[in-house]
Image 1: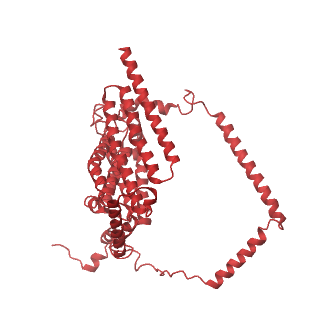
Image 2: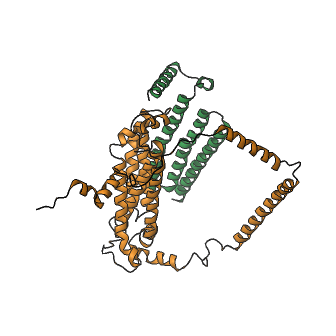
Amino acid sequence: MSKKISEEEYRRRMLVRMKQWINGEKDPYLGNMEIVPQHEYVPNKKKLREYHKDLDSVHDKAYDVEHNRIYRFFMRFYRVAALLCCLALISILLVEVSYLPPVGSSHNPSNNEVAAKYIEDGLQDTGAVNIVTGMILDYRAFDTFGESNVLFIATCTVLILMRNDKKKGKGSAQEEERRDSFYEPKNDSILQMIASVLVPVIIIFGIYVILNGHLSPGGGFSGGAIIGAGLILYLNAFGFEKTERFFTEKTYKWVSFSALTFYCLAKSYSFYTGAHHLESGIPLGTPGAIISSGLILPLNICVGLVVACTMYAFFALFRKGGF
Amino acid sequence: MIILKWTQFVIGTCLLFLGILTFLVQIFGVFKFKYVLNRMQAAAMGDTLGIGISLVGLMVISGLNFTTLKLGMVVIFLWCSSPVSSHLIARLEAATNPNLDKFCEVDENIRKVLDKEYEENIIERKDS
């Protein structure tokens, strides 16, 4: 026999409230917090005029060069002092530069045991032929995780600032977009023809760069940027009606969220244990093969997805205020 | 063999310098001209002809291998994309400049199309 609870009690539960908050059905502060409605600012013209009058009179008195001797002295002193400060800073920097070690010398402080360790043991430890990828996605995966999160947070910030929720009427997202692109050639057949040829090529090239991240120069960030550029070109050629068939806010949310979560879960073991001397359980495979080097390939795919989604989301938000 | 290599090198370098010369002409044109369409024409010349000649020179120097194929694909990509971007800029200029006749000859048929497009845009703007 299932336990039945009343509708009201069910609605008051923590999980249900959380679900409502996530879906945007209910504002948790509404009804629980005192909110004073904002009034439109109405300037008092008389007071404003008096204020400006005062300001002007003070300005005239204070900055009158001919009568105010202290100000005249200050102006001259200020110029001389600025010049001296600039010269002092320039000379300090130049002296410092002359003490820098020569480029490429073997005794430079950057040539320490860390770089030697990366170069010597990189292939053995990570299984990636491209040492840079092995470094950023294995030794320093935590750093890359932070970078991906920075991209996600940047999109959230732009979403807060630029989002346009209005569906219809004056100031709606569609109307704003039309006003912004008022003079733009719409449905330009040359652009559409070229875009339909180039966009698949660009996106395939981006996928190639991502998947080959551990074998050749490239990786998640550059490949994701290429895919994002392809998506933006498609959007410019065919408009929002075509792109919204496969890329909406919901797609963005789920793709970014799942990519970041997978990254976090896949790398958590090393975040918590201090990173080194812990087997991931995934065999490294033969170096040089596509499926090799353990977790680096899936992590590259995650980073690429986040970067591509971020680029497209930035463009869509700045252009229309939603996507 | 040595003679073949030297001819390859000389031809490649000559093409590369020709490409750089085209770029110089492009930069000169971009800063010399005053009007958008003239400047755009100079800039587009460098983006297609200049980069084409330079990359063909690099292809000759590198010989027959995978790099040559990649460079050829870069040339095809640039020749597809660069004229289209120039076309879009020109179209925007023609759509937004009401005094286009002052700067260049405008065919009557094109003028009609542009006027019609402009009116449609205004009607659309009033609707929304």
